[in-house]
Amino acid sequence: MSSEDKTMKPGLKQEFAQRWGKYFPGAELPVAFYYTVKGNQAPVHRISEGRHCFVDNLAAIRNGKALSFGTKSIACFGGKRYLGFSQELMPGFEYFLSCGIPGKIEGERYKKTPELVMELLKSVPTFTAPAEYVVFKRWDLLEEAEQPQVVIFFAPPDVLSGLFTLANYDEPTNEAVFCPMGAGCATIVQYPLEECKSDRPRAVLGLFDVSARPGIDANTLTFSIPMQKFERMVDNMDESFLITRSWEKVMARLPKSL
Image 1 (cartoon, helix red, strand yellow):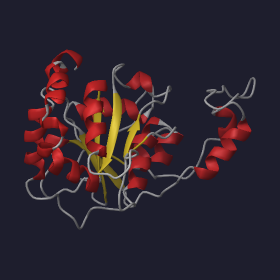
Image 2 (cartoon, rainbow, N blue to C red; image 1 turned 90 degrees about the vertical axis):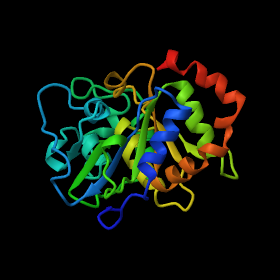
Image 3 (tube, rainbow, N blue to C red; image 1 turned 180 degrees about the vertical axis):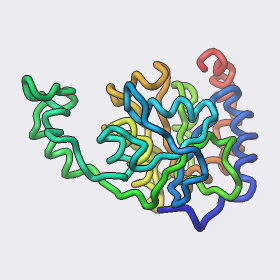
């Protein structure tokens, strides 16, 4: 899953930027990530005081600061697990995600019982990071020699509607977008990487995690796309619904929703 031996499709960076500006004027550029053995492709994030949710770090990346993360640059159990740097769950996780233990663990109450959490964990995928670092960069900062594995959009409803419809455009089903329950970082990293293994990967709609929401804009969700699907979506833009009057009506109000 490491991208050391691949490069970005020639011209893709500029092609996407041009079409994105044409059909989604003013909308935020996406962020991309890839795993690498090299520790010099972006500054390594340093843990600081305060909240340690990985999602909080995405604001700086969205604003144009490239960052890489390794085992020692993520403080929370969830962040390490869902970025593949640990398989460990916090002690008492089944109580933490449900009802808690009075005087010991405050429950998040995202599942009704600890037993439901244990059943859920049987079907939740795990993975090990394929390299020592994972690098996050905004799209315009990527180099042609880099190969992002997943592209992440941070978007309001109108932009999401365009991405959602485009994701389904060349698929024979109506389920080209997957919306799993999980930690914010899981829906941004782990689940899209799982989709990369498929011949017809799905996009992942995410950041419904109530605990992570304080680290993101109130009007924003994420839409994470495996690279092989993203390339097809870019290729399809000029012949899709984006050239119709229906999209023109949505596009006309985009500046008000961004």
